[in-house]
Image (cartoon, rainbow, N blue to C red; front, top):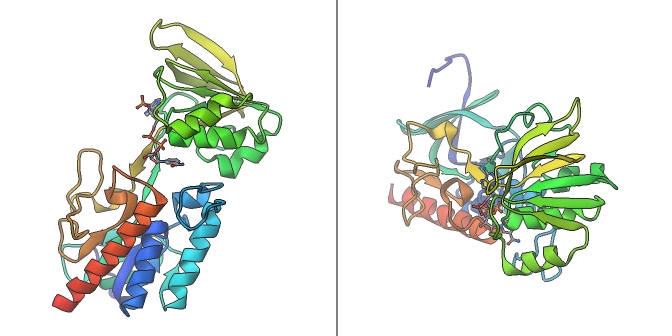
Length: 313
Ligand code: NAP
């Protein structure tokens, strides 16, 4: 990393990148261990969870809790014990030297230990029209954009828990929700399948993929291809919501930390990446569970291991 000698470098004991459930709970545990953690939140406070309208499977909330509310509570609890937060994102890291170096848009930091909790982002369809019409009818967040589709018809792409959960949420606004899935069997949990199948506003289109999104300035229709027959049909729609999985936010660490073939960080049983002193928590290194409760748990584990690492030094 190039050093600008005129710039002040802020030294921190522990820097946490990311403020989703993993980063926030790591901050809470690190603060309670008196490690004086400093969190660079990134641009999405609360992480992906904050985009979820209602989380029904986080223990302790039998009536559900909104993702953003849960995130705020996590942050409040961490701050109560001394964790500090800055709304800024890392743009460059150097883990080849200690203390580790981190640059953001405006600042430069060093840290004795780092916890990476930068999470994951939605996978795109990568079809013509998608990029051009994003924000003009193409969306990756029902909680954010559902309201714009009052009494309109939308297409939801995917067959997992996200597609069904978000599809169900969209029935509050849309007059029709068509869930397009590439197979004839859903991946989603039985409970969500039951709710979606029972919902009169939801229609399933199986064995089909979106090949193209059409519209001038806003979404007007999608071209669907039946993967079994090869037949292409045009389906008029006002919106396209894409929920086909997530990809880890690890581009920043390429060439410095070991990753699997999909880009998830390799993390050992002590939550440590391939570099001693650099730990990871949550979806950035978890292709398996990807739940708010597991990410929160990994955040706690990473902070416990950072405590041991710094004590050993
Ligand atoms: P997911 O489980 O990976 O499902 C992705 C879906 O998108 C699958 O149905 C997949 O089809 C389809 N898909 C993937 N790539 C595609 C492409 N290029 N074109 C068309 N379709 C494509 O992802 P998710 O639904 O986001 O869930 C992620 C994790 O979060 C899961 O562990 C899930 O259980 C969890 N989650 C839980 C809840 C809850 O508990 N309430 C809510 C949301 C998410 P195939 O089935 O053919 O692979």
